[in-house]
Length: 212
Image (tube, rainbow, N blue to C red; front, side, top):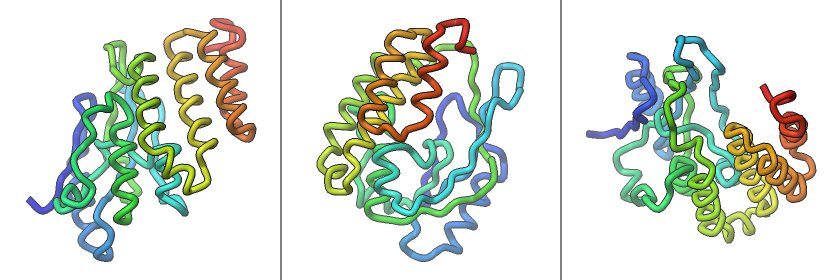
């Protein structure tokens, strides 16, 4: 086929996702080889917990070093992209989509279909992304793999802060309040301007009383 789309096992595409991405990519300049849509996070009862439509950052490479424009289920790429950027890094048990989209962003441009066309299902079942130790191992690997690029882009401290923040949030979701506080404080040390770290420290500080 001419295009490749990805679907995680806990996600669902709306019927219009693929046609709309194909149309968007076909109307884009030649160097645009990847497309994202938005998504909705759905709980067991079908209630929308939150939703997200990505925006194209001014510097996609720098953004991908810190965060992630979109998940695999939101992504469609031209079939020629893996020939340039390579295959998925199977050493990563988490943030493999961030790593792959970072590599894409160094070679190509993205386009956005600004509609929420992916349903991400969450619930009480176990998800790898919620486990702390695999997350810590994956983030450490990602940092080591891309630290030279981050230094070149002048965002090494911000990248460290972002991953300490994500680990703090993972610990918080597992009700490990002491680890959450430690990691969120580390995030602030690397980047004192990161407001969400302060908010989550307050949530973790009181344990079950302040964490909802």
